[in-house]
Image 1 (cartoon, rainbow, N blue to C red):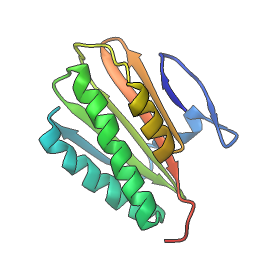
Image 2: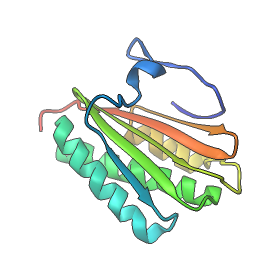
Image 3: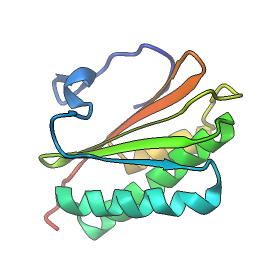
Image 4: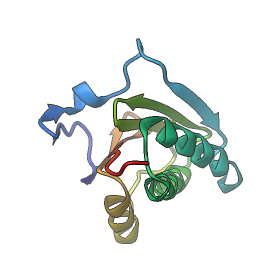
Length: 145
């Protein structure tokens, strides 16, 4: 599900969003990159590594990298001065949260972006918190790597 509304609360595999967000007591990685397509490669590489830790197949890692690329493109369009990402492996699920603080523009993922992200990950939700544009994405390992 790709949403772009504030305050949405959804269920994923019977668990609420609050149960799936990154846990600060468990290992995670954080990145801050400039909102420039030249730096999105760093986010894709980190996501690929985290996908490997979860046990994603090569195809699932490729899907994840494409989804991260698309989400970062949407955040770049929001016009903030930095993209912040947090990634955490939770059993066979990868959670990626991110934001661009003080965005100049409201986000509106295109129909093509929504279709692409839906095909690549299990869930992705966009929201706004004040002037911050945020997202939370989940992908579960399905195949044996």
